[in-house]
Length: 106
Image (cartoon, rainbow, N blue to C red; front, side):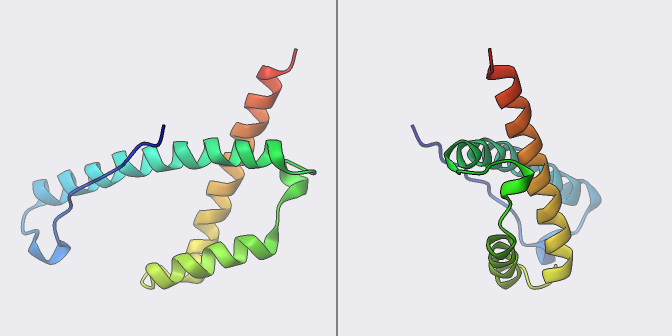
């Protein structure tokens, strides 16, 4: 069953005190953790379905497209910074997939 994630965030321009800013960041971090866990689980599905999985099965062109799309949504972060972030996210997802496959093997 699909799960919906919704978060309500203030506009940064409207945040005037440190506690409110930190509360907003904590909310974002919690949602980000949920999204990263879900992404890692989906990466495991992809690894299972691909003919060549794991680090050897990485698709640099697809990763470039992912970064480019993210850079359009978050131009302040820039493609270079997002490439570093997504490389870490992708590698972590692959590590989780490999660990899950190792633990699931008889």
